[in-house]
Image 1 (cartoon, helix red, strand yellow):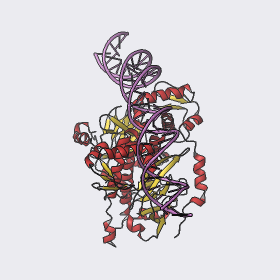
Image 2 (tube, chains in turn purple, green, brown, yellow; image 1 turned 90 degrees about the vertical axis):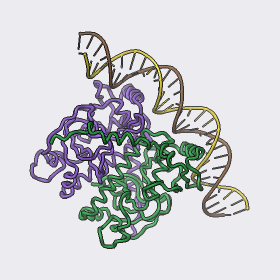
Image 3 (cartoon, chains in turn yellow, blue, green, brown; image 1 turned 180 degrees about the vertical axis):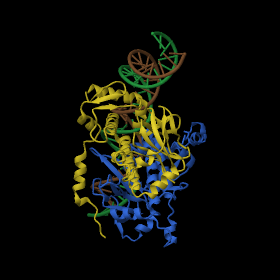
Image 4 (cartoon, helix red, strand yellow; image 1 turned 120 degrees about the horizontal axis):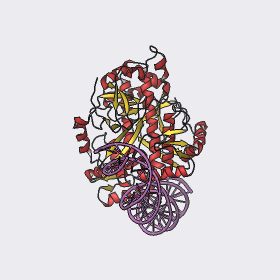
Length: 252
Length: 252
DNA sequence: GTAATTTTGTGACCGATTGTAACAGCCCGA
DNA sequence: TCGGGCTGTTACAATCGGTCACAAAATTAC
């Protein structure tokens, strides 16, 4: 049984698929033969509790992945972008609902067949593993955000997260597309729409970002944004890693 | 590169190690040859940012795994119990600090050698995968807790979580040992020690739990506790899974 | 193209949780 | 056995974000 996981591509190079038809198999090549399916915005791909029959690769569009707890409280655990995998799981049932935010194109793969392919390929396995691990790291960052960050820090963090997603994961792009609604942002950040709205207004007023239509902003002061997001404590961490005194010794 | 993950045993049967010396290799057998190391309470096993040199198996005791963000804000992402793995990662550096809560006994394994063993064993791989997936599911539950649950729901959820850990994962034991401090609980639940204290007092006053020494409580009304934890919405989820109309069709 | 509906923005007020502080209880060593 | 330090508890005030209400803008429907 697989646990339910959503995996982002992150550091996997997509180019080796486009350029080299018969070199090292990648997770992209695995899906490339499958038909592309289209989901309109607001449509569910699968629901929490459904039998976990397939694994998906996002070709185009953005999805939200969420859980509902009693009486309309919703928690979005992540947004899924092109190149990401969706529904990778060892469990028999999906642990969350996946819904298209924008019109989305997906490729589908039978769960059992997917597992077989992964198990039999020494090249694919580490790729899947790396994605799992990245996903776990992202989940931990999200826990930090939800547990200890202020409303302003959360919104700033969110903007940085999607900025990095858009611009091939490195160096945030100047213009950030925000396809999701304020309610999506709120449910992702553990806030209300009003607070998200107010905080966005505040960030605009302080000149950190500038509105760019309804569903996009321009980042004016990237450094300030990163500072507001609470990412300014890297010195401590490097000191920690360099401090060999505090490191555990290996008696073996 | 591996992401940083902490893995719990959950549904892995430990007995096959004790009873059958030479049958299917398990993650336990992998570590069983390694020397046991002892860490006093409050001692760090490794620090966030340290080179990720080893993977650990907890033999005895409880550990906390946490990240620090600027000026003393700490987030505990998980507690590690006997049978759990610690520090499994594809990254070069640990993503969090691991510290003994109580006096702890660990077995250590070189990261590279661990990866090799996993890669070469078709039996071990799914076990590790299953743990990763369980860990991911737990992380998502934690996100739900931090994003949308009230102080009372969080504390109730916490009590249930550790109750299930203690009693072999099924059916909470009547007496729950709580080896961690209020500060640990607070940093795990995204609250302050005062709120944790007040909420515990409230749960005691309402007769849901009863104090049992300083670091343990007796669960008097398990059903009420589960209710307070916000776990009473399973009907909805089963309805969702049965409703095949809403399920995505497979055009292939 | 206009109306209906949804989404977003903004203000006033409210409430849960936090911060501050004082105190009580426990553990440990002197 | 007696402090000293740490952990935990309780009370009260402060605050951040939530709730409520409504207006404006955007999107969709007709």
